[in-house]
Image (tube, rainbow, N blue to C red; front, side, top):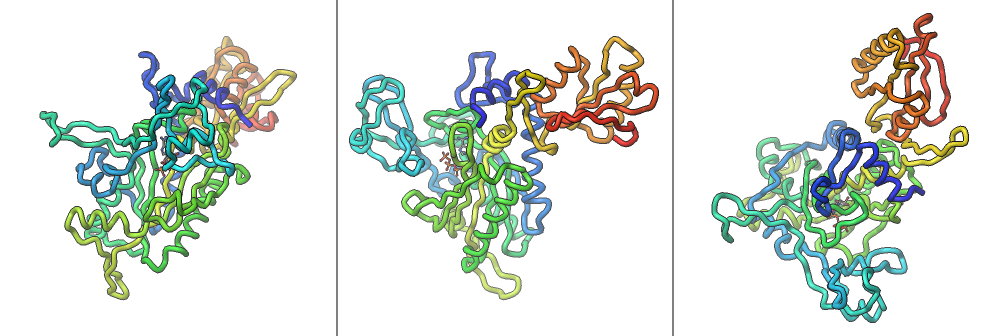
Length: 445
Ligand code: ATP
């Protein structure tokens, strides 16, 4: 199993992911994607969009504003209850999320309703100073506040959205009235969300600024159980076949009634064996008609859907598969990270699926001080760039160093132009995973 610090270090060294505002000493809970990281992240997001939206007849996309009418968050319940249990150590004044201070015997977080006395009776020590002297557990709202317009008073308060889901519910009526898709149908959205997490930690696993990919799938109330099972199966196909994450690192956790939102009749968390342990990668929740009824009440608008065949009118129920981009990036990196030995030397290699590797090919001349090799290599580079787009050029150091670097950034194939190329138009292709080197005609690349 890869260690988190090795992945963090590789991500920085090779330009995948940097601490946000690093040059100013950083900004806790924010991360910046560098040249290779943005390539990886975009490919993952595009793959998700293709699988869930473009390849399906029953899904449509939306892209809603991040700053929404503040009524949204009152109606959704976020203003009152989007909070984490905050507890302070009376000795060192460290602040922690009470439910994350320890794991239950089954390996899950403590209950979000845990009290100070329960923490003390369970002998839970402060992770910073080791003492047991907890203050009362308080609810800490995680929404970031801002002000809209020139006047900064309580009438101008707005929030950065803490989830993308509400941008879908607020667009449901416009889509139904104007596009009128057949039910069941899903609305999907990708975009930034903001949560003032009490303790952002574990690299990009828990950030304050994150990116989500969410679907609200609208169904007839009688169909939810069948459709929940079908969507859960699709989640597995997506993660295991399309994202190529190892099935044995993926676990289903049926969230017990006590830990579910009060309106949810079924929630399954998909956990992944991250280097920090088995933790939530994504979740799928049956949300009944809770959200649409809230919007109906707060807006005074009718949220009913009229069935095209039967004429029946009803407020649809909702099943929500919800993914975090950063957690999916972290899962892909954790599954890809390997260390092995080549010719007695330690090698670090990212065995990324070809579809997610920042570059599919690296092209280089065997020697960079031979103009005829460089010229030929540039020609091959241009051919591959036209064909595949994401191809990189490397003529630094010696060939061994270039292979090490390309292995670390996950480039599946290195193409090398040597003196034989000038004679017979063949090149060497070296495979990242098998290390096999084969000779191929340029026009067969
Ligand atoms: P957790 O229990 O880990 O705080 P959650 O249950 O609050 O997560 P949801 O509100 O269900 O998470 O959000 C849906 C998805 O968004 C999660 O499965 C996760 O992939 C992602 N996500 C949520 N919070 C964060 C965060 N702070 N940083 C990165 N990703 C996040």
